[in-house]
Image (cartoon, rainbow, N blue to C red; front, side):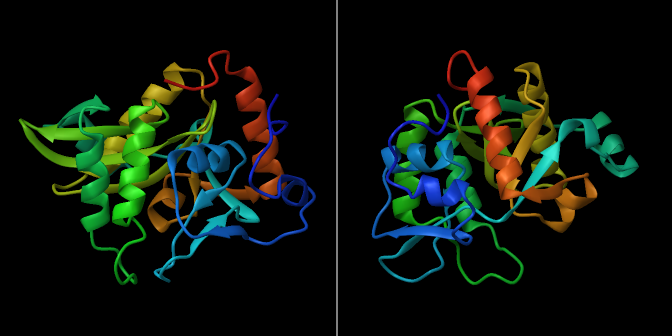
Length: 224
């Protein structure tokens, strides 16, 4: 049952709302720890401090509910006239490395370290991390990756090398999730772009309840 399996994290305190956004720290990261964290609504967010990995479960969690999705006219036009083709899990490592290299406004460097890349690539090989790729011919021009939290999907990062490539990759991911019966996408933190698409914040307790429900309704214990 959801949340009832043993965990390395302080789950009882988390569910009781007794801890802040950072619920734990570790000196490294590995696939089993990632699975444990995502299945309990937690994700790593290194801050650049060496040898310390903060594990976060924000008191306000950002979700994109598909029924509330708002597509600007310009994006609808771009989707209609898109030259791109889209795939799933064709180039996971290339996507995460491109996300690590992508410049982020207001950020110096990236949280996607080499250690993180190795752990997520191993998670992908185990079928729990996935990517969507946008291609222009044989050129990778955009993409997004994330983690299957046991029945719900948590998006981690995306990149683009040509206009609208990451935005359209996101829409392709949403279509794939809707085909599997999902009703929302966990985006963790609210960004201006995703807020314009209709994303909003909910309380952590509400997110954990929704996550638990999604896990309980997933017969295979995963999405893809």
